[in-house]
Length: 323
Image (tube, rainbow, N blue to C red; front, side, top):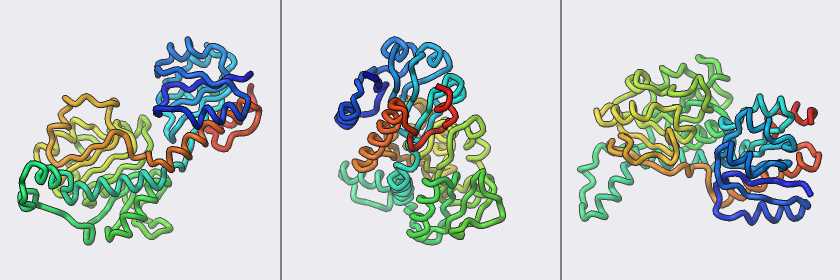
């Protein structure tokens, strides 16, 4: 019987995966740890792996000769050596598009939360303070500029919602030419110009060596004193210590982070003592609807490869021809 192992999953139960494996005639195993050594030890003869946060370096592929597929519950794949996977004939699958709407919802909600100081006003009322004026300034959407960094599917969904609220939307993306407009009519500008112009900057690009600490101290200094920074993409895109310093110095209106450098983040990090902040624990991707879609698609991709079928979403389809 073929075997699929669930490695370091992000869910409390595995009912969806168990049902799908049973119906496909596949044995399901579980390995809770994310490091490669634990995966090698728990999965010596598996045909497939489904994972949320597992780490898959080249040495893992050399140690698991039966492995045919790694399917990740998400869009990113920075913890998987895709080149090594391809060399060893292992397909790498993700679930693009499953959370476009909910992540963009979350980005907009976080932007408005900071702009309107909602979490601060809530905390005041809970401690017996009835005076909105102590939290001024309070912002609005109309008349402000919303800058989107990264115009993939999530960035475009966020842009659409921001425009619907009355923001003027501008954007930058490596796939777009500055000085032109997108099909939706948004001005495309260079990153530094976007940072200098936008009242809200929302990050939606992928993490890569080129985007690591892309928003650093220099670029934070380009932003308006009345600007809000929102990151629902990947934590290391923003130099979080530099962001904390900018907030403490009063150089920004505020910041909202759903992702951090190192998760779960150490609560002693300086960002937690910075003012005008709003945080969530890497939750932007989740709704009950998106979660069910994510788990079903990810498990189906692994089942398809294990059973010799072509999966719907494969990063390296050439690996399917090598095994």
